[in-house]
Length: 283
Image (cartoon, rainbow, N blue to C red):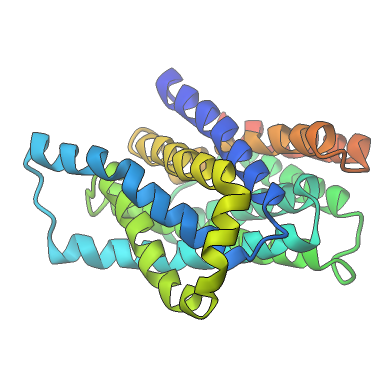
């Protein structure tokens, strides 16, 4: 992995953990409304950047581009809905590592089985370490904890969109900014029918969580844009696990800022996951 790709991934990890902190802080609000507000704000904030890119580069947007972006949007909508639901029931320092740890394991497995990528033995050992870390952080309570179950389900969507989006920017050659922005517009449109019956809550959620909505609107797009750019520099089986250094950041944020319990055990588990990530990334 090139130093630039690694730098992009590390910055993305901090941004990603930070917007998840904001989402957790807003978890008592209506999740669908909060997500719709975030997507709408992101559409407005990042619109000039996307339009400026199109004008400056003269890049055409084809029907094929729209089709693959719609596929990405569907996966991301499922991801956001499950994650926000997970935060309603579970701690940031538990749900986030379980989701982010499960995702790269599955993404790497798919990349090996279907994309012809072949990680070294160290990479395989890293995948095992990530699995062990997820088990430790769960406290073996998968059946009893809704937050953990939602975290695992979120991990499936993480794996799916990671592999899909890597093909979109790599094989289909869709510019990362267009995929990212198109996904935000698509998420806003896809959630609109779900928000309509709850439209009376829009003003309330906006007033109570405006800084979190705006912060997430900026950081969600920024964090994933950096990852998409990294996908153009390194294989999926390397980028997907390496970005999960964010689990350590999220556990620290949850323990220190949200006063969540079990910090030592979760830090240990996050460290194991991080070790597995490092083994995969540098194998």
